[in-house]
Image: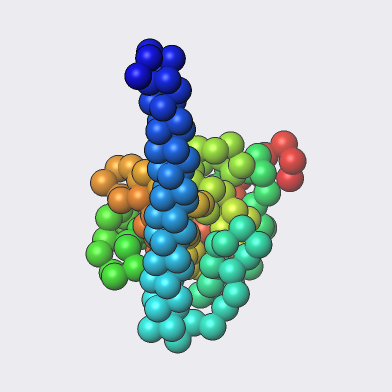
Length: 165
């Protein structure tokens, strides 16, 4: 077999392998996403929560309606929070320390937080069930595995009006 035929065969085999790996990758992604949605559905059912997600996929569950201002992009907020996995394992909290401060809409926090905080009123308390696409994605970070939905209990302590308020 001459060199040109060998290169042609190797090229075809490489293209087929590349195509198959892409299809397999998509299938794995779909499986992880289906599994993640199943875990979210099971959690909500176990907590007797019957609520539809927001368009983004965020589940916002108001526990205590606040009486103050609703933050908008550019406002600075101070919050207390407890972050856990859906099985209840705690991974982060500031409930026993100073409030966490960030400016809404700047990308300083995960997308699920930036969105969820805008549904709250000052003084309110809510749960955010955040799918991985609004948190740490398919790769994960900070010890949180990829495709992991997160649960945050959030208390909006104060809203400091920004330029858009």
